[in-house]
Length: 411
Ligand code: ATP
Ligand code: MG
Image 1: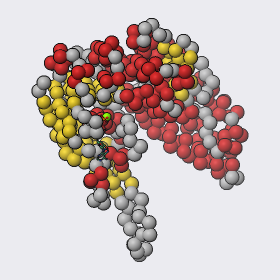
Image 2: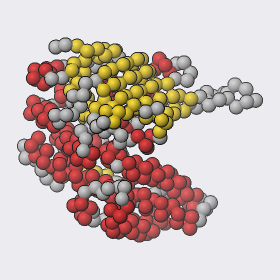
Image 3: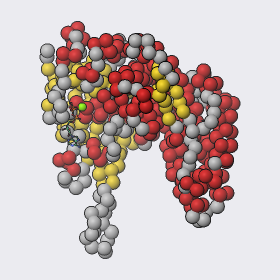
Image 4: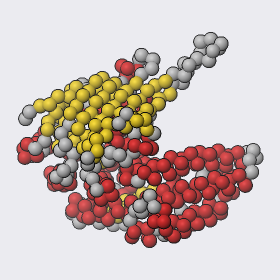
């Protein structure tokens, strides 16, 4: 699949951009702070409806547009997927709630909220309906945070990756988040004696059903990523043996799942007995934790408490990895993700490489370039064309970005 047209209005430092993109390799050259990462962020956002770095969608709207009260940003992409053409449009809009009549001018400025409106081929869609329509894999220097950062980053990484290949995962995740909020609220109510433990029964069941599915698919995805990354890492890091494991808050041996790969989420019969056993284990452990959960006012078990560990020679690289080691592991993981995505969707995902070449030695750079499929679209940003061979640049389209303006250049 590839994106052949991108249009941005008031997105970050792009007041206005209309860009035709070729189906293969694009190199975007630019100095610091010119808009390289912003461009890739826009494509990533159109595919996942999320930014890979912004804390809130509001950050994405151009500052200048922000001063005028109700600001908006618009992103449009035209994507070809096989014979299908998708026109994806996302409008990010800030809305100021209207003043309450009769109350006079507000003493404090009313809270602004940011809303997202999404259309695919002119039909309004919810975010959870478009995730997975376009698959992207993003490489950036921040990927090292996956190894050295906090657990929530690794959970988010898994969620974004699996969501792109499993629509049921997206829906289940959205449901799980709501259940978690409700359940935590109820736990606190019970602690304050405003609720009864019997009320938990319904929420426990919801948590177990949705949570088990999420863990189940994560286990399978991690098993695939692990075997792919293991092979890649051995080559990248002089024979170093990498193992990626899912650490669940739930006590459960996932061996059976690891060997069978991801299930076809559309067929319930495929989910089989093992998922049933996972649910049972979840429910039992939840029951035995009830008193503690009420005391804490928090749900202590489930995919929201899980983590991913990266082991080299049995050592946890989050704790013991050197920076260079962590960076190489992140690269192995991303290369593995590309293959994983390809195997799950039978399509080449769009590769977005944000200034990663400068950090890599020549051998690793070549590994990155070697992963690019013959039919794959890849958009690479760089501050320096010297990181690429003349042969590579020969088959690439070159653009320069300066203060949010992109133009095609020749070598
Ligand atoms: P580097 O090489 O340092 O990574 P870059 O080209 O990737 O630079 P970007 O991250 O794309 O730079 O940012 C380009 C510019 O956009 C920066 O100056 C940044 O401050 C600015 N910027 C970020 N958010 C907004 C926004 N909401 N409105 C306007 N400009 C923004
Ligand atoms: Mg950047």
